[in-house]
Amino acid sequence: MSYRNKTYVAFASEDIRSYRLMEAWRENKNIDFNFYDAHDLFISRDTSRPETIKRNLRERMKNAKQIVLLGSSDANRKGSDGLSFLAHEVKVLMEFNLPVVVANLDGDRGIDRSFIPRPLLDADYYTVSVSFQPAIIKYALDYYAPNFAGSDRTGPHYYEADTYTKLGL
Image 1 (tube, one colour):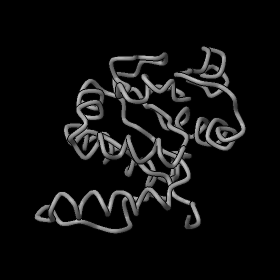
Image 2 (cartoon, helix red, strand yellow):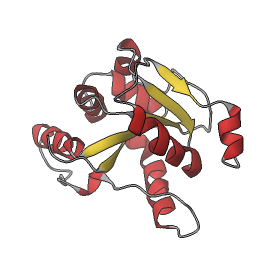
Image 3 (cartoon, rainbow, N blue to C red):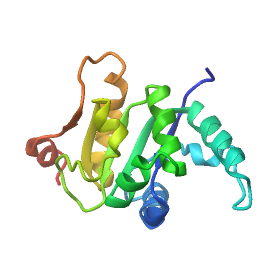
Image 4 (cartoon, rainbow, N blue to C red):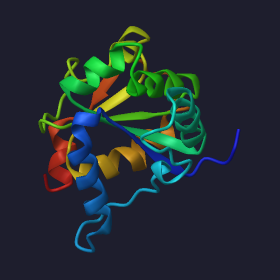
């Protein structure tokens, strides 16, 4: 597999504004948040055939070392339907055994199973759920993601209130 150095952000198309906000956080000099966006690689046109788009999504994910899944009811629905591009992304991330940070778009700090695609829950896939805030997402990418491969944990997890307090949240 190719060298992995990117963060892949997976989301339902309805949540594109939140993805754009993450890009704005990255560009804001006053916010300590950065990620190397795997979406910059293997660009597909909206007119591309579904097979081409799925192939390009797979290639992008080959370069990812971690996933941020924008958690929402739309993400759950699409990621669970077995047909959408998000469902394909969920299948591939599990195949590549990538760490998944679920960023709850409603600001919830706990596990919201209605935001996590069913394949991740059914497989008891080790994820961590956080609120949609740059500091806690960065914390999860810095501490959960690097330890993912060596962990024997399963299922969804979350950070206790003291972690948020330490981050000033």
